[in-house]
Image 1 (spheres, rainbow, N blue to C red):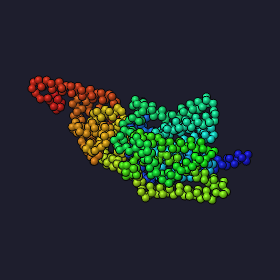
Image 2 (tube, one colour):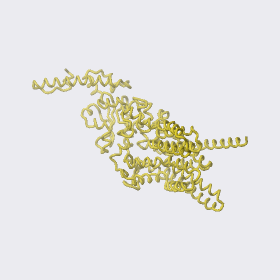
Image 3 (spheres, rainbow, N blue to C red):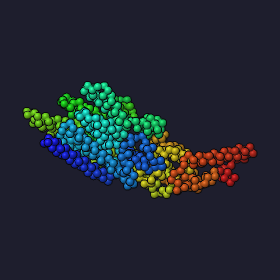
Length: 607
């Protein structure tokens, strides 16, 4: 009875600590969200606007539903749906912290539980959670629409359930491990590497325990069927919506496609790929913690006895993103720029260096605990061990405090600013404000993938836009824009852009230099990189009358037409256009035989 009472008391204390920890993280995250918003950095990067838009498009679009998720891992977009549906949270970007700050709390909680599982010390868990939450980049990516903090938090959940299964061998922990791996794969593609890593660890553990072959087979099937669901969803989504199961890799907006025209110093170089990733890690977590974690891991491999296998297994899970991105850099499907290496003085995709942060925190926390236990157990060397423990603790706190102060206050997110300096967001914001001021009704034709900031800032319902994911609305509007779109947004074709952008900005490529387009549309705003056109109604009404179409059936001329039967309307318009132009050609041929010039559209209309 006394033992049961003691266990109940301990469980109550642990639960109280977890609740307090989660609540503290919510407070810290909320304050940081407001600070970042006040500085204007919530929607500073292109990807932040893109993630936010995808989340809103799932429920507010010409074609709402799963088709709007696109080829990014969808977990972030799904989590933000209920918050992005609220206009003020969508337009401000504050939908992100409402969805992600609780996720940050869950990540800190599972890191605490993971360290407690290994050490049986609450202090070790609290130390790890503190190091995690005090990192300014973890906080930044927890209060803006990005996937980094979400993915790292999911890694802690995977690591915890793996460790729990290794310790307890509970079947439920193995099932939870499969679920958490699926969630990690839906958070970022780096999560796909967790499947083979977990399978190898589980099989190795079962073999070392000399389990029967059929038991190993059964456990692997049950675990594997759950763990691969993230990958299965990604492959099936691409297959259904594009016919290509690997569309998440091959689509024209994938990182590999977008970055092919850039300088790729790490491509096909194992050493350079490692160095760029390592320098990115140093910039985002600090050299002190990075070097300490590497040294701590190496030391613990030799010093640990009882938990060595479990420690290595969990470390492999937490360090796995490093190896994934190392390969991606080597392959040339990703790039990282840091000021220390060519092209010198630039940041790009430096956030990849944050993904192994969970490993550094775990290794550092385990090493501090190990030294503390040695200080308690060794009478002769305890002063030396105690001093060493204190120095390492001091270094960890100094690293966290200095990094937090420099990034948050002294430099005010200088790395983020440098990373986003090459974007076209300022020009897009100008155009969005011009569109908001002039918009009256009608559809807006644009490339969503290249104009994400416009749709956030203009504060016009997303169902008013015709974007490339609104098939077949987009294809038909691209073919005959004046019959479907009252407004058209495109890149200014006079600016120098990378080849990828020229190829994939289909509106500008098709219509920027067209006399027929300029006849139907009036240029109402232009800056260095963006153009906004408004329909000339009189011209389109004339075109409609010319082919015998009732103007009220033309989408671009009808303010009340929110949606229409795309194939039916398009077929009717193109059918009448074909009859009209065939008639013109017949009359032209007859006129030429009589020595007359080909008649104009005005003559044809009179006839």
